[in-house]
Image (tube, rainbow, N blue to C red; front, side, top):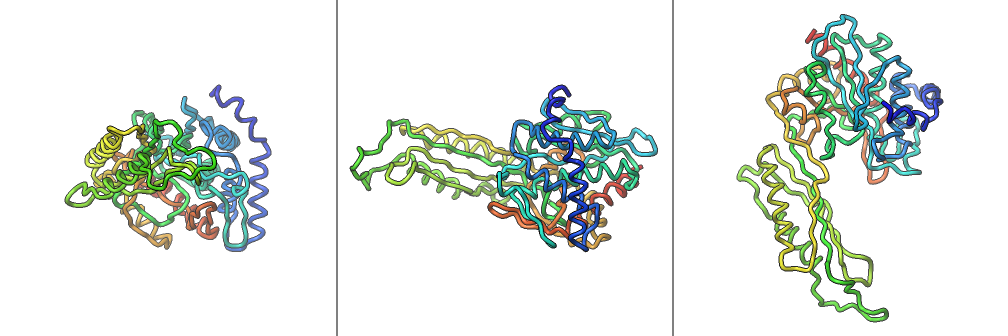
Length: 406
């Protein structure tokens, strides 16, 4: 806790007060929402304006810690900056809890575009969708503390300081290994895709391959044109590598795929490229096969540099394991039933889900969206009316599945 003792002063104490006033203003402008969903939106607008990503997300963490303190709860902050709280149910039983989790950061913060704008139907801002999960968890914690939400078991809240797919992150380890806090089920809350359920959680690697020439600057003297037919090892290697990786059939059932997401080389017009990059994604529903594919990509990249004056580095940018569908089968049906009761349209799909880190350890776990909207290149657009459905979904899950297990 000493690490965060000084951080709380970074965000002025009037943030929580302003958040309450902001939700009142939002509610006065629209008739289709509730004060509860407006509070979520107000918190999200304020969180989105706080710079991110930063080391351990200190400023956003300070906002969360201030709100938690106002509920009279003592949080736990681990050495990595992850914030955890456990709110006890009225029965006082010490059975395995329900876990709700989200992460604090965003890779799309912008000093101007993250100052969000709202009108009667939508809210817009850079990285706005990324903070909806944090705002929703704060709302749910307040609901339990106030007695508005009445769970049948304890509820643990986890606010991760790092993205769950960060290879350096280990946010779930302590909870999953704890004899007291290991949950009977877990729900991750994210921004969009309200109503979407990852029936088959795909494993995913995001890999960055960088290529750099080890020759001296090959640019011609000033005033001379670069030779148009001069072979370039950086460009040639990029093209060859992309073709090889795209053409691989990883398995006969085609459960594994390689997608080239970005390929780039150059240092500007009039200069011969001396650096290049390939960003790719590997996806598979078969965990062991996904690891084989990752090893093959690394070996292909390293081999491509043999006998050339280039340096190649391979970096694993993110990783999510393939989930365990059998562990989640009954849990998916329970969540689907709750969605039907709330008249939320259900869409079953296959995608990567950080909840898979828990399902492979035998814990039923899913990530669910809070709202409908669109993630743009620079700005997210949130359908404000959908926020209340998302709030109701999270609160219904907390009450119903904990009481079923009580």
